[in-house]
Image 1 (cartoon, rainbow, N blue to C red):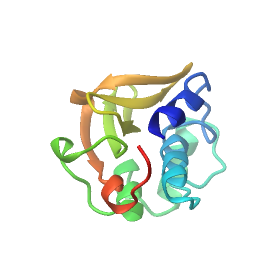
Image 2 (image 1 turned 60 degrees about the vertical axis):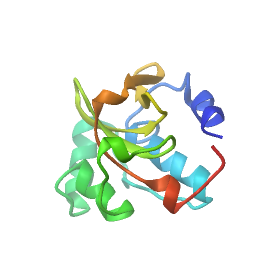
Image 3 (image 1 turned 90 degrees about the vertical axis):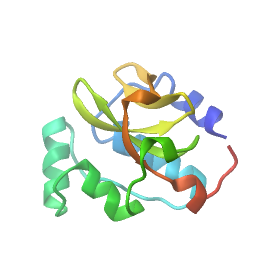
Image 4 (image 1 turned 180 degrees about the vertical axis):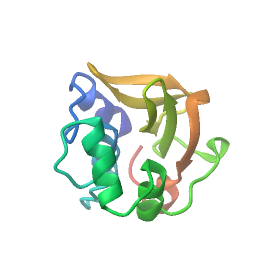
Length: 133
């Protein structure tokens, strides 16, 4: 299931408010649970707009937003394939999907992968919301 999901996003361009890291993670959560979960409610169309939407919703940043929806984060070594990860990028923190030795993230031209060493922490959704992997 994860492979099919990644393939669907492989060539979708990064667009703030549509196919950014929050929307990517929320779409994966919806695929696993069948429930729509909007991690970040818009509308927003830029990085600045996303930060503003996070603050307007009462959160201090991306991590506190995800904590409110998914609970306390886990250390990178405790994450499994399909879990949601917070990674460090050149542009700042971003959400991705753990894929074993890599983390799948939205990039300008579609899904890309970062080494698992980029993980800062993550959320163990696979034990809470099992879906076919």
